[in-house]
Length: 167
Image (cartoon, rainbow, N blue to C red):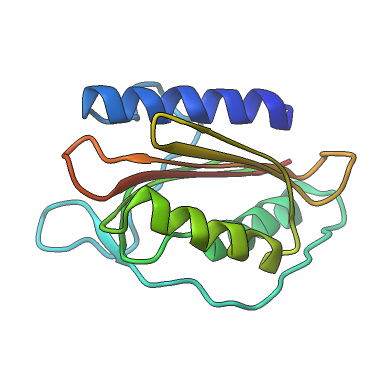
């Protein structure tokens, strides 16, 4: 999947989540993993702010290292003050939906500075109707990258965030 189609898909899902207030998980993912530590039956987990270390990754091209690399970068792109709502991973891709108490504007400032700390570059930033989408890649080849989408939450406060990275 190319970065452009990933970004377009992520934006569409974010806008649907924001507009409908529903869950973005409607398909049958290849592999779905529940939140690591659920809180008293709600199925969600609190997500601490990610570390500010730089991970350059690079893997050897096999699926195990690509998945590990996507996981490391994905962890660093988890929004502050958030709860993991859904997580889907494949051998080479990381896709997580979060709900954050931070506003989309606050998260825009956060991601403008956080994305470069992961070793990825911002290919483009798009904004529409209070939502923001960053197309991101390790380099111009686009063989590793994805998108981060931030939209106003469907519940009226905070933000919905989609982090999708991989190769």
